[in-house]
Image (cartoon, protein in one colour):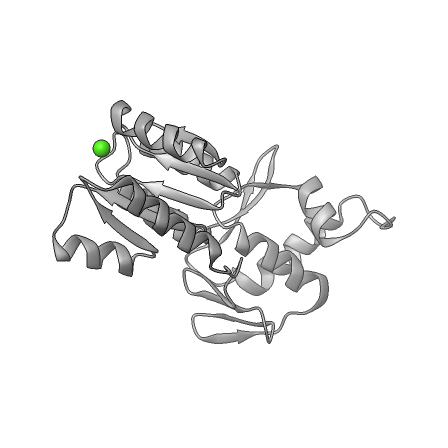
Length: 225
Ligand code: CA
């Protein structure tokens, strides 16, 4: 089990880190919201403990961006803010649990164990990026409520981009995920399929979702990601 603690108060961070490592869990600590967001995006943690009042980027923003990027890791909010409005805001925003400071370490442990026991769907059935909707069960794709006919590699390419929304995917990453090692076709196959996808998803739309990142690859995102 690998956990991430995003907490800027060194005393609290050290106290929690010592206790959780004593349980045998691997724990990384981020001291500000931006560092926490980067780590949580790059590393597949089993659980995240998130403070709200953080430098650079607030815990509320970290939670919002992680969920907007489709990252489903269990998140426990750990904060001094006890108002029901704060709890509602963060539970509605995708938090799995909410603990107020001062807290009992034993209770934190119990809640972590309970969340780690819960089987997590690594990905939800419906992926939404802006007005783009992808149903992973039926493989139906809609943009702005309009059905888009898409199948085969185009679908898998779109799903791969959408589950990694906001992240730049290199041509190599896409090749390895969507095609396989036995593929011996065009070297520019990714670019060809991106072109097909753009024609279906972005043509005639004022907000483009598929972006080329020069020298790197491609990224599916809305303007606010
Ligand atoms: Ca804080």
